[in-house]
Length: 189
Image 1 (cartoon, helix red, strand yellow):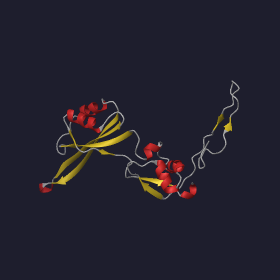
Image 2: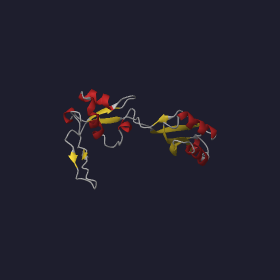
Image 3: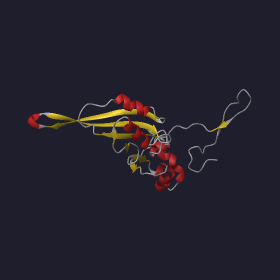
Image 4: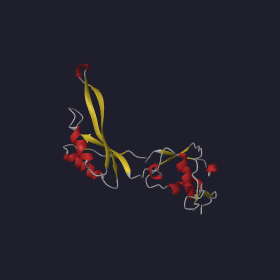
């Protein structure tokens, strides 16, 4: 039985009988409605969609309206930054001047860890004025690692970086926390 504000409240549809004579009753797929919204909510740690729906609509079961308005996110968990797969940026210390390290060894050590999906090297170059009009290159190097939080911890990633002969700084998770999501108007509920 569907709740009062459910998008599946309409009666089920009975399909034609199959080869065995069974006629299954199903709920048809519905197209995502065009949702508009100018109100934005900043995602905070520990928030749940049912709580947000109650806060904005006084109806906790209307959480799917928020999901419809943010169609770029395939998962409700991803919308709130609670998905198991996350991306972390780990700055590398002591590599601001000089040649690049052996990236192949570092990336290989990280990708060998179960739960690590992807590793990328981020290298930003800043030109700092030096004496006699010359510029000096200063590098900001970091590793961007996409991994599954149920299988690997940040401590394991830092240990692998340390074992590869590098020093990792404070990791920064690049997720949804602190970012905005769209809240459709209550009249749409």
